[in-house]
Amino acid sequence: MAKYLLKRLVYIIVSLFFIITITFFLMQAAPGGPFASERALTPALEEQMNEAYGLDEPIHIQYFNYLVNAFMFDFGPSFKYVGQDVTEIIARSLPYSLVLGIEAILIALSIGVLLGVIAAVKHNKFSDYTAMVIAVMGISVPSFIMATILQYVFAIQMDALPVARFESFAHTILPAVALATTPLAFIARLMRSSMLDVLNSDYIKTAKSKGLSERVVTYKHALRNAILPVVSYLGPLVVSILTGSFIIEKIFGIPGLGSEFVVSVTNR
Image (cartoon, rainbow, N blue to C red; front, top):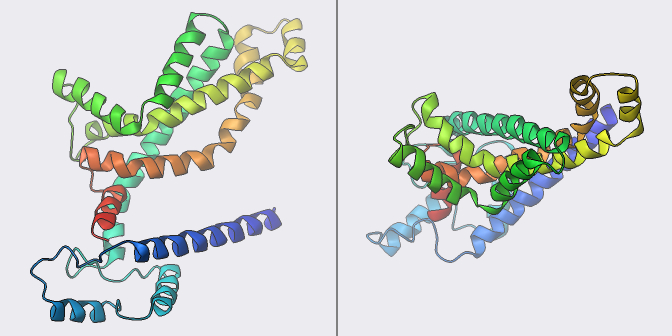
């Protein structure tokens, strides 16, 4: 177990190294700079700003400093928010993203597993077709389109839920649902496929032949083994939620990490 955890830790560190490296050189290759949008900035003042932030150093020196500071969680001062460090901005924005992400994961897991089980138990029946139609729609419709539809229906037309800001639980429902839609659909299809395989296995047939009820066979014996692929999907699920939150937070005006990420890319 310790060896496995060590291997995973090394894998994570190596992955972070490549992500940081690729991000750095992509931003270096992009045209312009963090002060390019400041029209009133004179060349002399821009040169002073570049010197103050270390942007006049050779690229290999900048990369080394960036790499060391990143692994020490020292991301330096913000170019946009004067007098604030990037670490402070992350600490301020992270709670919003965590709440939204956890809520979206819970929605995706609970409803996705439920739809998958219903579709498998009611195989080739109306419930199965309905669940799969929902899954296909969830996978086909991008999250930003789903967010727009949810805003229009539940916030504008029905006036049932608030939109924008992040002040109460009611404000989290629409963005969490929009964020959870795609992974929810994938989990439903994954759960259905796994559940069908388990329900057709020999030990399930043996349990049924012993007179156990359909409910006991399904939820006590089949579900326990069928849910294993969903557990394996938790890693990609977290990544999907994190990347999807960039757009969702911007659409709903949530001051989370995703929104700050979009601002940082825009301002380089």
